[in-house]
Amino acid sequence: MEHPAICPEAERLNQQGETMFSEQRYQEALEAFQFAHQLQPDWVVPLNNRGVVLWQAGEYALALTEMMKAYRLDPFHPETVQNLIDMTVTLGKRDTAFTIIRTYLRKYPDDRRFMDKMREIRPEIRIVHHMARSGGTIISKCLGCMDDVLLVSEIHPEGSRWFDPVLQCHQWFGMFDPEEIRNGSLTNMPFLEKIARIYEKAYAQKRTLIIRDWTHLDFTAVPFVKNPTYQLTTAMVLQEWFDVLHVATVRHPIDQWLSLRNLSIMKDQLTIDDFLLGYRKFAEKACEIGFIRYEDFTLNPSQAMKTLCDQLCVAYDNGFLQKWYLYTTITGDTNNQRVPKTSIEAVPRRPMEPSLKKEFEASKDYWASIEMLGYELGSVDNTGQQKFMLPF
Image (cartoon, rainbow, N blue to C red):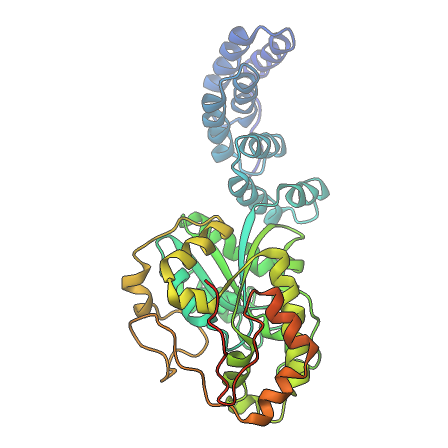
């Protein structure tokens, strides 16, 4: 925005107002700034100054209103942007401050003051972590269908070749301009920038962004990437700009393995020892951040989802029970013939050969994991069934 030529009288009144402000003559300062604004309505400085005076006088709502007028007049006036950011952060509106500063940085990306300020603001972002074949798809459908939630599915910094968050939001939610998709200006951005753009769009729509992490890449890896990191990589990357709220969902390792090994894509890719090592590493992370068990979810979906929503600071929507099965913007196994299509209930364990039972019971990782996650420590019988009921 080009700066207007300043009317001398408006400039004089503005200077007079600044002098009065320094002398704590707030009402007189407000009047001087108002007269300056009336003389030159296209000059942002008097409006900005009125916002500062009102804030200093404790009139926070009026100050924010006045500063927003200044911002709409010139969203790239550094002092106005800085003041508006400070006000919204003080009022607990970090998400608003984040979107304001992101707008400024798109025009002035090299402004270190505002880049550093963005890292300080750190609005909340929400992530759900779960390993493959652990019931994550149905749990995510229950979350995604809730009012005012926007969920992106199986997202990971190393996974955009398979699941690009920008493409998902474009195809599922119509979030981005088709031309930006065609020319690659969005899909070629770094992962952190992509998520920030999606966060801004979700905020503009008054929706809460939830990222369903593609945790498989970190704790199992194959066949998509070579080696597991045993870290919550998505959360670690997003922590640079966001305050991460995250939670894990888990399933008993026997049931998870019996389902995972049936996938054609996993044939000859993974040994049970490697699976159980990754499972134990994930169980450790789940204990650090909090978790719910898939088994508890199937027994009492409402209570499990309340717990999940509380952990993520998301408004709980009990209507999910009537609409989760209609939710289609999701990745994962949505056509599993063993899972009921419209109800949430436990399914029988798949058959397991006696030799596999021995492999589980010989694994220290197995025993450590089920103890950490609160599963019964009893052995399994020859059909693969636990001898004890899962606690609830």
